[in-house]
Amino acid sequence: MLRPLSRGSVRLASKDPLALPLVDPAFLHEPDDMARMVRGFKQVRRILAQPALAQFGGRELAATATAQTDAEIEQAIRNLGDTIYHPVGSCRMGPGPMDVVDAELRVHGLQGLRVVDASIMPSVVSGNTNAPVIMIAEKAADLIKQAAVRA
Image 1 (tube, rainbow, N blue to C red):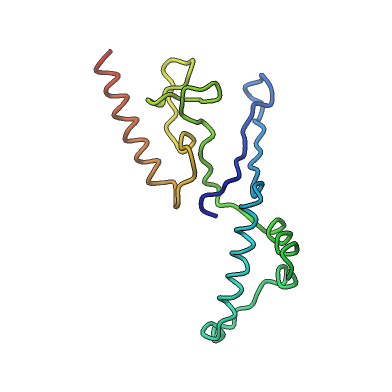
Image 2: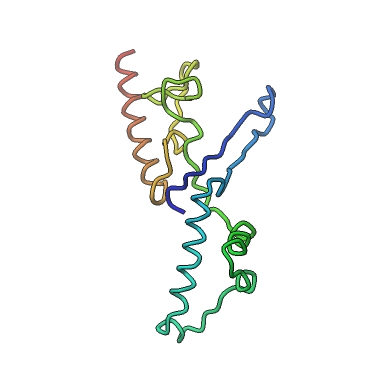
């Protein structure tokens, strides 16, 4: 799904730096996200039922074929849905108490550390994160060079 409204979280589990963080992706937590998935599911069914596609002999997965009502389709999506894992936004940029980096990608409260990846993006992009991350890295390289010249 492009542009989901659901937002997950990443939190520290403890003060132990080796402890794994608590990750809650909150996939499809927002009702609108699920409603969009159900509409998309139904639209795919309508497309695949067209005579022009009959020659290819495709048929629906047995696991979803019995899902007819919106509630059944929603349950099938929850049971079978997956992600392509392009998370963004876990190290938000800004001046607030929950923000991680400033406008020059420097981590608040630490010297010599910047975050240069998709985690600083404020929202999910409408495509693969590769190109935007390259742009972030190019900008970070410029910022680091400028800081070195000033020093």
